[in-house]
Length: 268
Image 1: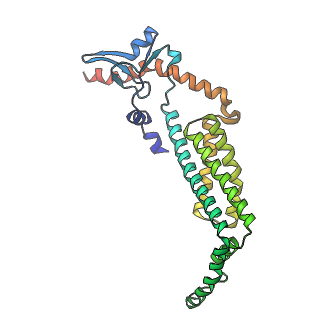
Image 2: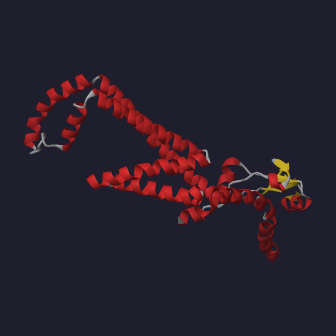
Image 3: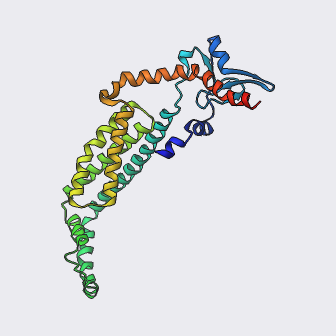
C-alpha cells in the first residue's frame, strides 16, 4: 500500500487520457480556474490541478461540472480494473476448459482405448525407476475422468460454462465501474469462498491459499470502499460523496493554487 499511496494517480491518469478543464458560469469560480498568460488563456485541470493552455473542454454551472475520478477514487478505479482483468483471464480459461471437456466427450471412446493400450507400455519404465504407476494419483485422476459417463461430463462442461460466464460478467461490471458490477462481484466471489476453503482442507497449495486471500481481500475492499449493503452510510452516502466531489473539485482549486504559489513568492 505504500507504493499505491506514493503514486500520483491524478498525473498518471491525465498523462494517459488528457486534462479535464471546465469553465463554470459563476464569475467567482470562473476567475479561480482561469488565468491569462502571454501565449493565451489557460484553464485549471479538475483532476491534477495543472493550468492548461487553450479553451476549456466544458462549461456550465458548477453543479454540472464533470465528476472526475481523482485521488483515492482514481486509485480505487485502478484496483477494481486490475481485479476485472483477473476475472477476464479466469473466465476465458474456464470457458476454454469447458470447450476441452466438450471435445473430449465426443472422442471419449477413442481416448479411453488409447489410455488402456498405452498404460501397460509404461509399466516397465515405471518399475525401473521404482514408481508405482497403478497407485499414482495422476493416473487415478486420469482414469476417473476418462471412465466418467458422458452425461456427467456434459454437466461438468455446462457448469464450467456457467462459471466462466459469471467471471466475464463480473469483470465487465468492475471494468465499467458500475455499482451493479460491485454488488455482483461481492456476491459471486463470496459464494465461492466456502468452496475454496473446502479445497484447502483436502490439499494446501500456495495457489489455492493465494486465490483465497485475494478473493477475501477483494470482497472486504469493495464492501467498505463502495459502501455496499448499507455499510458506512450505504448508497446514499456514496452518491452524496461523489456529487460533493464535483463541487469541491471546482471550489477547492483556489486553495491548491494558493498553496503552490507560496513557494514561488518566497523564492522571489
